[in-house]
Length: 193
Image 1 (cartoon, rainbow, N blue to C red):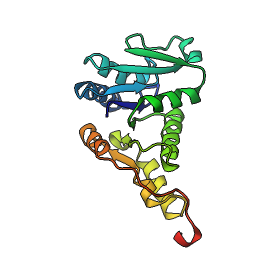
Image 2 (cartoon, helix red, strand yellow; image 1 turned 45 degrees about the vertical axis):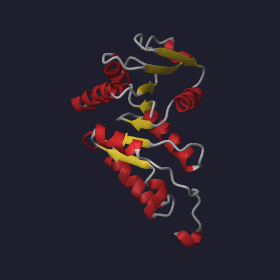
Image 3 (tube, rainbow, N blue to C red; image 1 turned 30 degrees about the horizontal axis):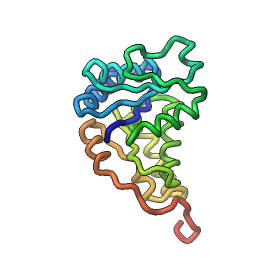
Image 4 (cartoon, rainbow, N blue to C red; image 1 turned 180 degrees about the horizontal axis):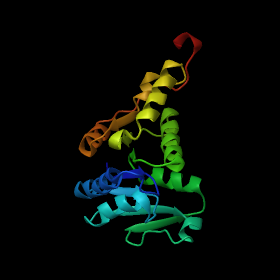
């Protein structure tokens, strides 16, 4: 993997460990010569993961909608800042630039980005690994909901397994490096339920 997109909050959250692990992820990517692609901001976990990479001589590409740049939240230490017009263009560009995705804790935007990438993978539009760094069990309830989707016949187990999960950065990167996308479609017939 040459570049990984990281989706995460523009806030820090309530636990110091979120910030600690975001910085460590940026540092680890830099140490492994894996470029970071992210939302381009200098706030919250977004700024922290970028700082972790930048301060350890990593390559960091930010993709930021112009309307957010005008609010003066763009990070000024990036290798490259790409400005786009819309949030959808931002996701498309981030997808084009990266070989995989990691989600850290975040809010609605982080979930929306994560699930769009999963949906694109489920539809066969890409074969990239998509992962969650489940810091302090942040995503436990979401993962329980995904399990319910399988049990209730809305998600195939093979598609559930597209989502790689770990609470350790090195383990997560190992899973991503060894990931093979499923070769089946997303649709579930009544006979399969």
